[in-house]
Length: 65
Image 1: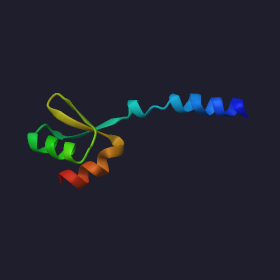
Image 2: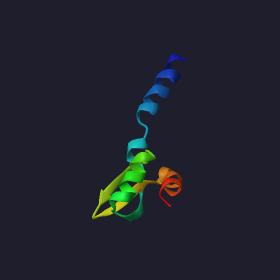
Image 3: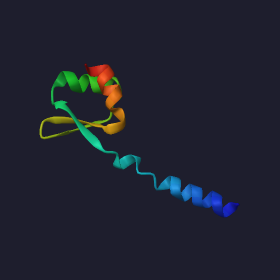
Image 4: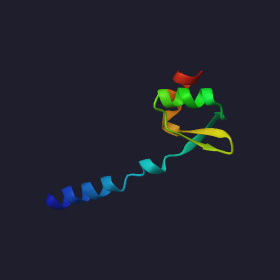
């Protein structure tokens, strides 16, 4: 039983949530960035483009369209 609990803890620590896939959202504008931040949507900027986490796309659509 203790072994299973330890295994569960180890597997939980190996979670890939930090390696989430990002998808293209739109070109970088101050307005879009403000809206995403207000809605607490995770994003990154690459080459003047805004990319949001794949699991945050619905939140981005709700706040920014």
